[in-house]
Length: 276
Image (tube, rainbow, N blue to C red; front, side, top):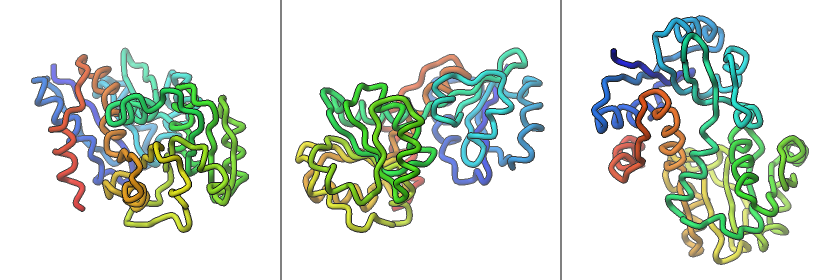
């Protein structure tokens, strides 16, 4: 019997997930489908009824549904709970479990494109204190980074998030970047700054260590102004597209029984849809 999976969000037309999972279904010769379905938050309980009834084996969840699904799942894994969002659902025997694979996506992207990046990493700076930051912070804490500085326009928000998540986290305002940068070996942007060519005003990347790595979870454009500035300074950079590809792996494995590979061909197929 053909297995059906999905990505739900509102809106959803922009999602690259059908292309990613569709490519893998074809590559591994699996009898299955993966479709994008627009589900407004108020229609979520009704959609969960379809999921419980066995219409789908599971699917992905994107904005603005990553938090609302919590209340409807039968189980939420501890990692998703600490991140505060679920992006992957698995349906079995009328029960629905929720997990968060952004954590694995973030780590998988850096491991593939900057092998050894976390070895002996003393200090990291994370820009932003929103939903995306939570997954990145939990991932960095799990890798044993000594000190993780969370910088946000509103310092209170960064301090609040640092207190909430377990690990060596410290919250600051963005204005503390110049003071903290000389110690940092990793800089991560988790904000939406970089989309549509927007840039951080006055972020002196030249103060970072010469061997520092700069990464951005924004992937449209692939090279954000932040990454362009870092590259111009000779710093190592990793773009955000790999995170999108790697976060898709665990869900596909759970639904279709095959652990897929993130290949250069898959990346190129998704890149072609991004426009430059």
